[in-house]
Image (cartoon, rainbow, N blue to C red; front, side, top):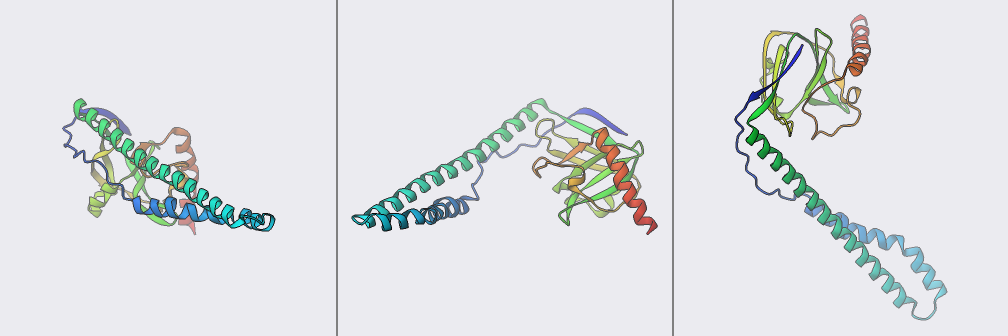
Length: 230
């Protein structure tokens, strides 16, 4: 069973330092060096055609064409770098504004999940993900994926009750608490089996809709029964 409430919460102050652009060297290599080289390669057939058809000043025309290609490519690449930096800054600014609203509101969302009976460790492309797909006795399913789980001792999971405190706007996980009796660990489940289109930045905690719960009920538990009988 999943119970949702709002609680008073005292947020920690977040140091609003402007983000460092860590991909500048890579962007310079790709957009200011690599792109002009690709452009020169692409115009090579045109330059060859000019050399064959134009007798006078063919070298001059070829050099001018190459220079124009380099300049246009570098201008385009420079705009791409500026766009990447602007997008990163706007994303940081949006996150900063959300945090300030959450601090001003001074409340958080509290999810209390009881009657948990199964934990399914999550993997993606054969690699384990720090998260769980969790099923309750009422056949409700939800997932929790967070680097915060690295901070927990092994005996924190699996337990029959989990409490999650989450920021209401940014959906950042603030606290994860477990208690109750130990319950069953199941086989691993792949992330795409319950999330089709995802970004790791968006993952955290969510409750799965009824239709997806029924699909998981049919597929995962059937696979588990076949595994046990083999």
